[in-house]
Image (cartoon, rainbow, N blue to C red; front, side, top):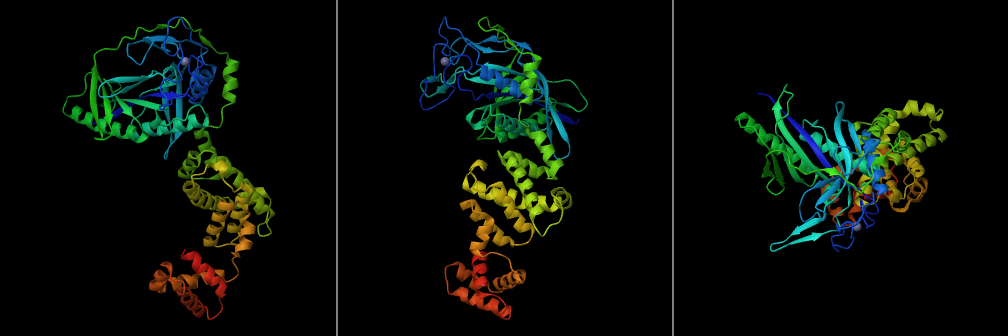
Length: 498
Ligand SMILES: [Zn+2]
């Protein structure tokens, strides 16, 4: 029997609002000062009234619109009753049968095609307090009680564990672009429970699902689902497929899932409408207004960058994973074409240049901006907005490469210097005398040969024996029959053996 995997996700997103969901306490989960951001509302004292946080509501709508969900013009809050020490009121304010938004789909461009993943609903609710268990007693930190959450429930549309991971990574990108959550899984700002069941291919029914909890990273989501697929496949093959719903926890150390409990029938949360909060009402106009204010979403950007510039999908995925990089690259490309238009060496208007040289321009951009520049960026720990190099200077630098005015080792030096000092590339070129002169290529070739032919001396020089350099210069001079400039040879060897 051929089996297929059916996966759905339940995701909680911690919203980055100033205050909590229903009170004015700071929305800050500060572990170092427990029970600091609390008041009579979020600790559930009798006689207090909650007030809906407008910013949280707005963030919920923004996420819903970005996931192409229908924002409901009328929705309401409900009380979900259960008893647990981290829930001071004895109920959680959530949304039950009339959620903020319903029925959406997130489309993601994958290697072979664009795939859509269905989303059932998005609703708002408050977080519970945090229990901290020690050997002898338990502590409760109410800083987290009442923090705003958006819960997103997907349809069982994932067939592979990797698809679930990709969906979550895309969601994180969207949340960060919208600036509504930092969505760090390890910090609990993005939490995910995954439901999984199997069925034979062609069967359309759904069988009792297993819920996996304690997934603290994208990797954990994929690994736990892969583990569970294998485990359940073995059960199906033995004709012992799961016949009740169960909850299992992911054990990161052992890399296995462990049974926590089985569920006989649905839990009864005795939902009822929250009498202290008015319904949430939106007009069509308000919804459209908010939709028009959304920034460009990752999948739209992905498709646009591919169509407009001819980038590869893998390059585009790198570009959109670094905040601000796409905008930077687009500015560089537009300046780059302007530099080429102004250059004596290239003919035509900017439009003609773009049409004629697009392939070469993009290749240089990928090589120098995506590879070399990102390496410098990563090793410095800087963000794009702190970078010294203006798009105009970067474009001028790429023009030097386009016109073969510098060779690649000189270009690498110029880029590093620009990154450090923010200087104009032409100034660095002048100062360092890195201009490639006629015969420069030949010179490089002689030096490369000398380096290859004298590995022992090269090692000694690298180890700090400065006088060996004279020997290497001498060998190059000999090879060039005296045509090389010893000063230049000196410089190039030093760069190559740095
Ligand atoms: Zn409070």
